[in-house]
Length: 249
Image (cartoon, rainbow, N blue to C red):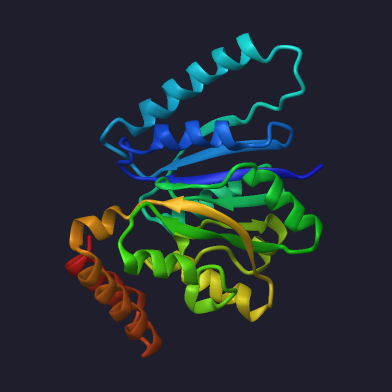
């Protein structure tokens, strides 16, 4: 039986992590084998305690309301890690017991029955892919950018769309490059496109536009474009992170 390991790297996500965990429990199909691994990079804002409290509270709810029902309760683990999303996701993958890995940002909320959509894709021999994306913003540019994510083009991909991949395939391509503090998701996705192992599922994941709200849509889009161009001209992982740290972080 297929098992999905949902891997959520966090660093000071106290504002979003409880909402995400609640969303996952409310939107799974309730019949698949799932585990949730929250990989913490050293949060200092109480994120870990929020996860622990959620784990305790949801266990009690499930015990009271679903006894005797055909329901597979997702387990939740907190895994301490070094800071760095690539390091956190690779460590989570090592701890994962599922044959399907699902990498998810703490501010991205997948569609109803997302687990079944992923399993159906894998059963159809689609070993990696993502969902279409929708920002939680009505700004016309962000709505246009969201619309483009329906196309299976490498240029339309990003980590906010989430990523499912079989564990065997993930291991065979070496996981996320820990040389990159940013851009690690694009590096991995590019490998998958090179192997022609990527599909876009026709359901929408809703993701936060908080960085766009913080910096402004055009300013942030410009900086993202500059990072993309710099990488195309051979910028190192250190150069990309220096630019990101100066203009975005």
